[in-house]
Length: 371
Figure 1 (cartoon, one colour):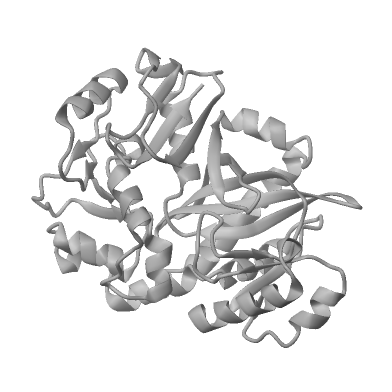
Figure 2 (spheres, rainbow, N blue to C red):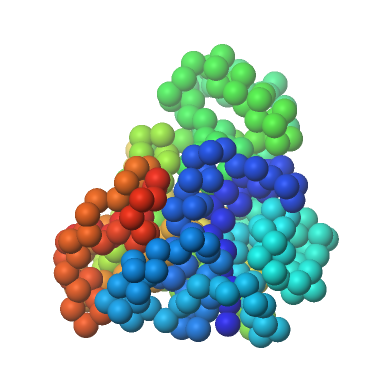
């Protein structure tokens, strides 16, 4: 039995390394609005940390979709496995406040190890392990930079670059040299160093498609769990997922990268992720990827970002597999503001059309499935 905690600010908390992290107001609104999101991705018998639950909404959703995940009654049992959105000193502190005893949580040493693992440099390490095992080329790895002295010459070369904060998520903390002056890029990169000690620098590409491979790291090994096909804004921020079967996603990706190559990447990643996780991390992993359109053809960037936590892509995978009618193409998105009215058509506990808000009315963010 897992005890879920929706904690979307985890990457921001990791950047501080503090247990008493306070997120910006909008992020707090997002957490409150999505507190019951684990009802949809949790397994039968799991519990969800949430307060002030709209009982009428909860009962309606449970009946329509045969939801068997319940709200935590703040009575912790020894058989429960804490499962926050992501691990950090801050998420562990919140679980303690929910009544989870300290002995059921990772200690400070392990939490610091998870924090280090979640640094973007890990994607570069995994890239090295993966690229060495593949019979075809993938995009080069990002490079960690702790100074900006080399940036003027690089920017004058005419090439385009992305600078990324070591701890950030959902397309935030990114700096694109194509969208600003060289001076601004250097100043912002310098600010990244002051904020988090370094930045990751990589080639900027013309993106054709964004997707992710999803994994679970367990004691027995690291296992592939499916795909996530998502969209981003012009600035690279996450905007939503297509809810499709893995087979259909693979078919769409095959327009650019062969299924054999995708399968090879997945197999190699299983071993690479298990190696970097060691004894430190057990749980869900999302490896963000993209296909770039280059003068030499389509190029796979197989390690854009690695999230050692739950992701919206993982939520989308579960929604598609459990709650969307087979063959139906739908979208899952998160937006600020009130959710649209519920017009979902449900047959045999599966969504077959309309609009389905996944969070209760009155929330300041909307989590929505729409056909």
